[in-house]
Length: 280
Image (cartoon, rainbow, N blue to C red; front, side, top):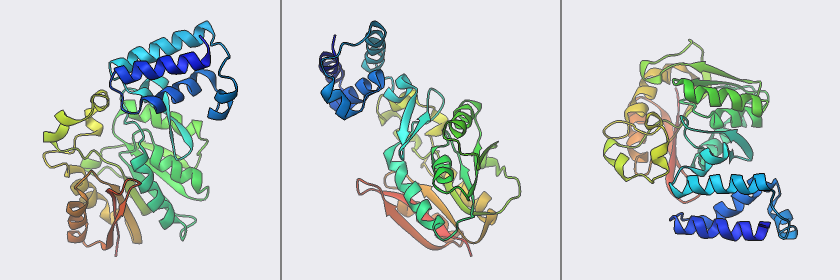
């Protein structure tokens, strides 16, 4: 089987399995198997896959047929131009979250030596990206679960972000080390309990602990605002990713807690995705 045949086989298999972005995924899988860029694939499409590559292709496609996440099948995923190790027990990095990073980076332009705290860090993609983009910034990552923390630790090493440090703790308990920060970021669990049954088949493989935000989806926002507002320096910013339809509610929580300049930023699809505010 050559590369062109493998691509067509993958595309047809994924389409039959009900994968919406079947063509994109087929290309991504071929890139993963061959190590070639899209441009290289176009010039080497008659090259035969090795027996090992064909076996890997079969395994990945079988996993996708049962809607096992492609990111888990590959063992990594790209976020903000860097690869992050992912697997069962950790939330998959999503493009929506890059909007949160964009807002944080915009804030950090005026604070080159800022101290940053990333709560509910999971894979670490948010905090590690901020550390990688700002070598003089100090970033602390807080995670409750050992499974996710192992991925965050691996990703710190993978991306050589030695200005990022991982800590274990539970934001609902207000675990903190007494430090003050210029920026606190978080992509907490935010799916309301009643919507858990409606998520995509792939999401059901991801840890519920990284998804479920209580009855109304706002439990973690309430806890973080309450427990960590006093951890911000004067003029420091708290910045959240929020679920669809939650932005106004989170804005109200921040305003009621005394945050100033509370605002909303949309993601690349025009959805209200980021809520932020500054401390007095």
